[in-house]
Image (cartoon, rainbow, N blue to C red; front, side, top):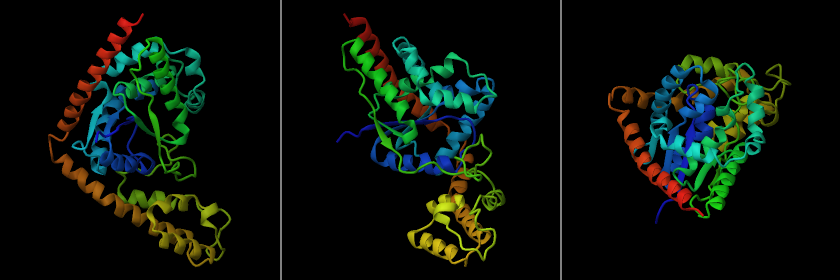
Length: 330
């Protein structure tokens, strides 16, 4: 039975944190066992907002790949590559840009939101406006049938589907399949201050943080503001940010135990967070160990080059079909 093809990528704009681990990578670990997966570092996408810092993008690209492999992404099970190593992405991006109406891009809900959140950057660029077209090219160049996304990313995928439909209609050939969403079960991971965990907000716990830094950050997590003293009963399920992340590390029995102990004022917030910190550190231990082993293998990056070669072969076939379709249309 032929496996369905999955495509997913990540921008190299900083080190991995718990949001990436639970929101993306743990899902990838499952997907690589079940589907034909293409996982790529989206360095051109990073340029849309970090065009003034290309050296940082190069640095984070290699670091990101190292962290992926340390977590367990397996280049023997998935095609792993860097976007800029497959020039056909840019070629299809150019061609799809010819047929994509500008109002489609301007209505993108993330466009205004990101411009507002990144006011310190000049994002009045064609590249930033057109990044959904590049995203569509990333997916369609491999004719991916499935794309793992969160609910907030569904409008992006729908735009890719619209571009695919428009191309197929204009050139009267069903060349591109309309990719379907693989919805992630994990919601947004909260950061130390309660907002979505993000490097930009300075509220993230990074996978490569040393143990003492992990402890320090977890102890600073926002807890139940209506429980100033240990003797006050708490309600972690509704009022504690730390517990929302903690649940990912606890068994059902442990979760119930924490909730009951908190409600009965038997377990203080500091002690609870100290226990949680040790669980996180223990979960990081095998990741750190694999990372050290990889760093001792001078040829670890060769697997990425092999992945790019495989990706180019498939992408080139698609580009040739695209040109043939355009040139043969009435």
